[in-house]
Image (cartoon, rainbow, N blue to C red; front, side, top):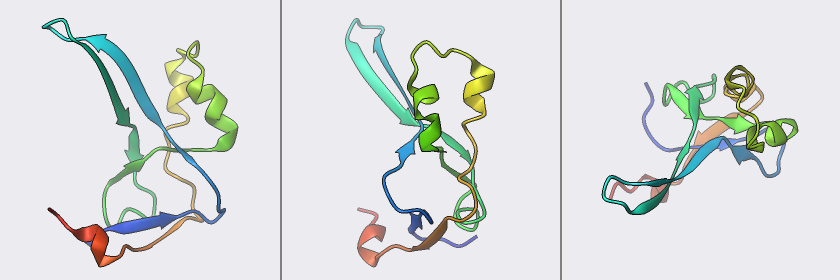
Amino acid sequence: MVRGALIGVRSMCGLFALGGVWDHWRSRIGSMLESCAIVTTAANECVAPVHDRMPVILDPADYDRWLDPANDDIDDLQTLMKPLASGSRGRPASHRCRCRR
């Protein structure tokens, strides 16, 4: 497995959205907390040499389905959690990105 930071580049330039989850909840001691996480999926052919997982990158056509708070159809939402389609590529990141401090 290749190690090191990798910058992913989409073949179509522009903004993109990562799949994420968010919640507002009360801890055991009564504090209100907000938590979030980036959802991951299996790596595509670009990321696989570096890691076995990658963030879910949503297609713009799927933004509304992902963000709809009334959509509680687990099967529907799981269809969005797939690796980024081929056509993406990666390049090594600058050594400045590799600082482990």
